[in-house]
Structures are given as C-alpha cells and as structure tokens.
Length: 195
Image (cartoon, rainbow, N blue to C red; front, side, top):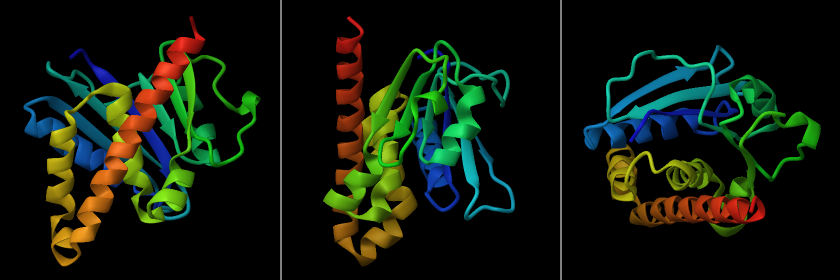
C-alpha cells in the first residue's frame, strides 16, 4: 500500500478520535506504519474535532500533511474546517443528514460522496454507533485495514462494554459492516456516473 492520508472531522463528542485510534491500532496490528494526530481544542465537546491519519507499508516521513487523499466531514462546521485539506486528488465525503449547499463543498475534489450515516444510525441501529458506521465507511473507501483487523481492534477498545452487554458487540459489528457496504456502494455509483 502506498501512503494514504485521511482527515476525519466532526463535532466534539461524535467519536471521531475514537474511530481514528481504533483504525490506527488495527493498522499497527497488521504491521503497517500508522500515524494518528488528534486536533481539538478546549471545546472538545461542542467544537470541531479533527483526526489526521496516515497509513503506509513504508516509513511515514512527516506527521502532518497539507492535502488528504480522503476527507470525511460529519457536520456542517466540519465541512467548513476541512475545505483546505481537499485537493484535486481528494475523495471528499460528508454526511447527507445535514443540509450542505453545493457552494459550501470543496471546488477541488476528485469525487464528492454523501453518506447517510447519521440517519442510518438513528433509524436502523442506534445513535451511539454512528461513529462505528463511519469507521466501516473509512475501510470501505480506502481499504487501509482489513475488516477483521478493525473488528479485533474494536473488540480490544470496547471489549469491557461487550462483556457487560453482549448485544453491543453485535450492534457495533453490524454498524461496521453497514458503513463498509454503504461506502463501497457509493464508490461504485460514483464511478458509474463518471463514465
């Protein structure tokens, strides 16, 4: 795998940093090089939180980057905060549950995809697994880690909660699968519409 840079942004409290941490752990367990840098201020809850992730088979030179290969924005404010990380080679993803005008999206992007992650979590699963749907979407969009590795890392992070309530394991794994399928489907549809 060549170097893949991902900027994942949402409101504080949406679980952006947890997703980044789990993905980085999954990559580490696969003997990949992975860097995760959290970016949030004192407004951890109620402000925009950004996670910068890099994955590679080779040594990663710099911890920061100017442009991302994939940007995922999970709120209106996150869209505004991530525009500068989008370039002509960027796959830009935003959550379709909030209203975004076309002019608010990046002018330069290889492809723009809207995913209904929040609506899917609220209507089909549980609002608390919204971020796990996003984690599945990251895997579906990028293949940065194997699905099984992500499940293992998720088990490591949330295993204590799963022990108390085994239904949570099933719910989280289902959310991961739904996110992956949603992203893969959107990529195929986007590729078909570009033909």
